[in-house]
Length: 192
Image (cartoon, rainbow, N blue to C red):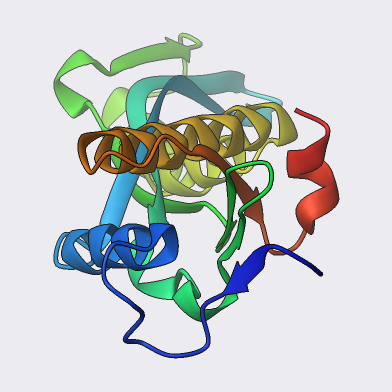
């Protein structure tokens, strides 16, 4: 490929686009995670107990914030490529990961429905404890939904692009940055 720089050595001639981008990513590695997206979700879990002598049901509704990030320490700076002709920097990214799931227990709701012969101290508490254990897995499942992950990936690309383009512009290198996920290859970034 003519006019394409590939970063094979950690030290490049001063002022190169790849060196500036590498230095930026290296500096950001101290933060390690670039939080790119926050998803606000509401987990709803339900537990029922149906018996001849009466039914009982507990529904727990828990709002939560899920944070997604790209680990900048996993960016392969040696695989970044700069096309001199088009002034385009290609940056391979690791996958977006869930950094944290923070349920807001203060805003959680608990709805109990107990028939006359069912007691809150008996089955009500058992169902309440069961739903408490079900919340975390339900929130994790929601966090892995294709729609939310697609949005988190789009935001990660936009965040890395914005970070590197601003840094390169400040260094006087007006460059188009094309982040892409290694799992997708450059094809996905080329379509933008």
